[in-house]
Image (cartoon, rainbow, N blue to C red; front, top):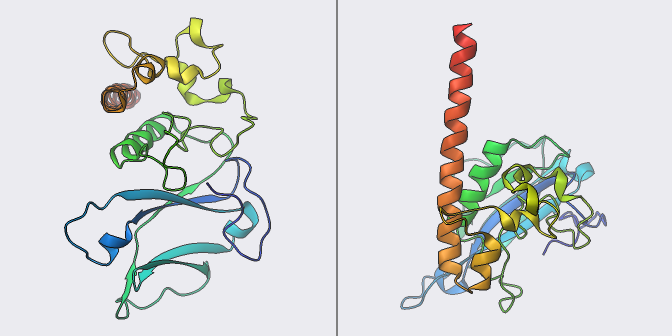
Length: 227
């Protein structure tokens, strides 16, 4: 879990997703990095955070050198390195997410959650493999991600629009979104201890919600053009 700004010279603690920039990096097992054969190579999603002050002037870059992941800081006004990597150095792709208070788009949020799911984001944490991850709550789709105190009310979350009215006062309302035709929810499927079925149901619901929202927005654009 992220604990502070990734800039070693900055002591700002990470408390909640309201400012700065989050960097997502998939790291692989040492056996994969060194090319060992005959073993599985799980991928682990890792997060690095820059506070708002540091994110304004610094960006992070990731590379693998001699089998180890190296995190480098670069000032935004610095020229990028020439194309091509020195021997033994591999630049690692990553995703940057800017964090702002209330500017998230529902369609983009759903697409992000689907990609997070498909990329194995809900696998066991490399830091705490004995603790299962929780749907929505352990994704940055959650407005309280990284905030154990859950200081932001769930009413501010975009997912509340999918929660039945009778369930909106539950402790974790998003766990009561109907995911299947039978009305099964995260709360139902978690209780059966079937992670595969739970993730399949979530993926199906996300794809359907994305498709429906894209269709609605396309229709709205067509209507505006017709006026």
